[in-house]
Image (cartoon, rainbow, N blue to C red; front, side):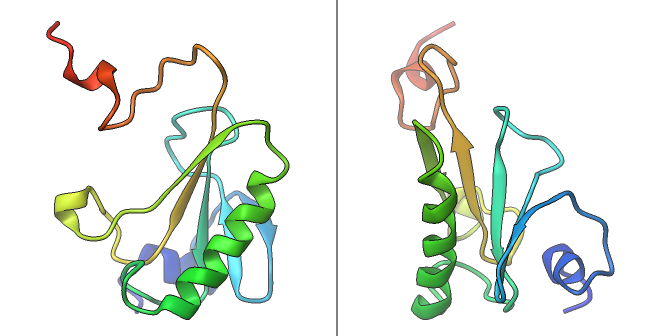
Length: 116
C-alpha cells in the first residue's frame, strides 16, 4: 500500500503532526484543518472505508470517541466512496471541534442551501 498516504504515515515513511497514538490507530492533524483542533483518526490497518471491516471501523471510532470526550462539542465524520466526498481510500474519521457561531456548514445544514 505504498501509494496510500495514510499507510505511509502509519509506517513512518511520511511526515505527519501526530496528536495521539494507540497500538492500532493514530490521530494526526490534517494539512488543511477546518477548525482549530481538527484531527484525523486513522487505523494502522489499510481498510478502504467504514463499510469494509466493521471491527476496524469500530476500533477507530472508539479512539475518536476518546478524543471527542475531551471536547465540549464536535462532529465526528467519515465518508464512504467518492460520491460521499471520500478523497483518500483509507478509512479515516474527522474529529472536528465546534464552537457556537463558528459558521462551519455541513452538507446538510441550511447554510449550504441558501442562495447567495
